[in-house]
Image 1: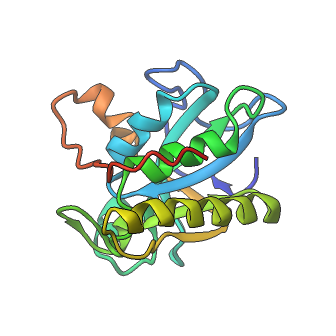
Image 2: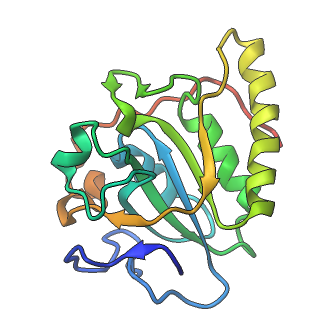
Image 3: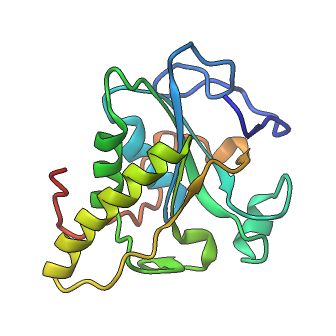
Length: 195
């Protein structure tokens, strides 16, 4: 897997899936980075999906190398809170994971997600190659039709190829498993995205 910054000291094991969150990963797996607001609830939603081998939370899409949580929260790094998803495409397709992405948050809110306000909470979708990027943008058009029918505005999701993923600090990894009463602001819009 490329574009993973390994400078953050981490235990390296997913507390729920019991799989590595750091490379190397088994052959044949693919990588995706998704931002749906606060990464705690987004990670929990994604680790529950079939075919997901591992997840980790971190920061991507910005300019500052090896940012801290405090720096990202300042809104000055350009990074979004993202979830690294390592998945088996033979079990769960990219299309299935993007359905979860589009239905689990409001991709029309710009630099916020509910009460979480700032560019670090923006909706982002980073993909492994141009073909996947094209697919994601096509699926976004289908999601837009459903959103528009429900009175929502335009999708503001930032699409791109995989940037460097900077792992977040240990206490953020699988946060809602470690802190079951922790904050989760993840809310969908009621669309189904039956791609």
